[in-house]
Image 1 (cartoon, rainbow over the protein chains, first blue to last red):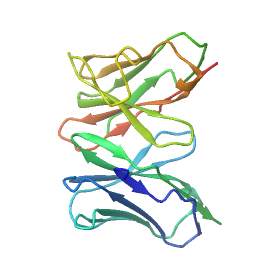
Image 2: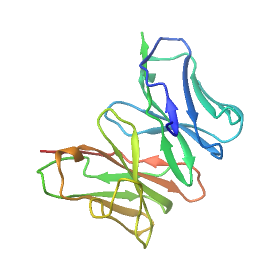
Image 3: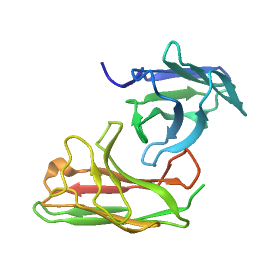
Image 4: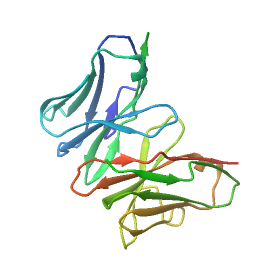
Length: 109
Length: 114
């Protein structure tokens, strides 16, 4: 079992829809969780961090964390073509980030 | 956030040679890391660069192949030694600023080995 798992996609949604990206992790002791966005040919850019169970909202982005289920998700409301990228889930373990394989999101105009 | 300068941005190298990648940050940071991202893959941690001591390598990575230096709190280098085509990847520096539980990434070095 991989330490951090994501659906590899690609996930395709129409413009204006909600994109839902999911991530599960294996280390029950993990306390810090991150979503990065990576455009093709670019380096990862931090979108959201979440540390407590529940929802955290920042503009069109909402991160959701459920530590009991070892599950973290990212919702993107009113998806735009500019949101088309690979989204990387990262979990902090022992001071290091462990990344999932990434989910490719495509937002169609 | 931290401003990270990573050089070179890309290079094409011959088999058997070595390349040193530099990472400079504009403020003191607690942690500096080096990652590899192979084509179409996610990020894999190579090592944690420790200031004033030997780097801490992850399983599958060794100092002879990837020597790392961190002479101070704002600068680190990664050398890819005795390169082969299998080393063709993007190499990324990341930093964790003091008192921040967040990592920021440099722009990366795109390496092609012929």
